[in-house]
Length: 154
Image 1 (cartoon, rainbow, N blue to C red):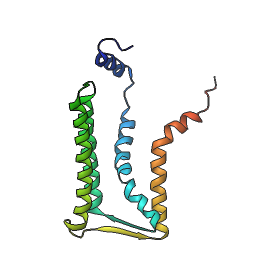
Image 2: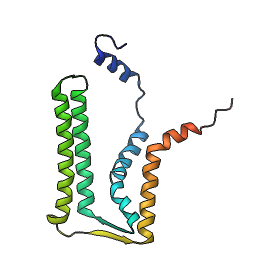
Image 3: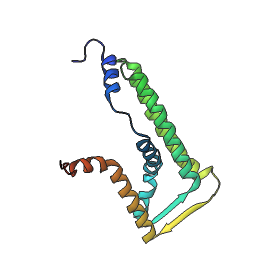
Image 4: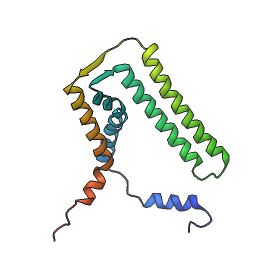
């Protein structure tokens, strides 16, 4: 089905995919930090939400770094059927886990007490619910829009 060279077949498919508009790219760039912070906002369902500046900035930077390295590793190993690719992906997963454990430990023991926002009760629940709505909308909005799109009248 792919011929003798699957990489060239995939390259041809990639050329046929329409490019994203600048508006779509800007929306994605604003959405990425929001999606990365959802883990913290969901804690508000416990009734208390503590947002530390150092934790939030560190988490967003570390997440973007992990996503960038993951992108590079996946591009390098996409068409290589060797064990080195498996070990590279395993190493990336282990490295990612260590980074986030390190961030959690740094937040507790290394970083100074800095500016933070603390919310209790209703405000914590509302922010957690808003975060959950943003997360669900970002995951399912395109599918929902396609499902309920009205046919054009001619």
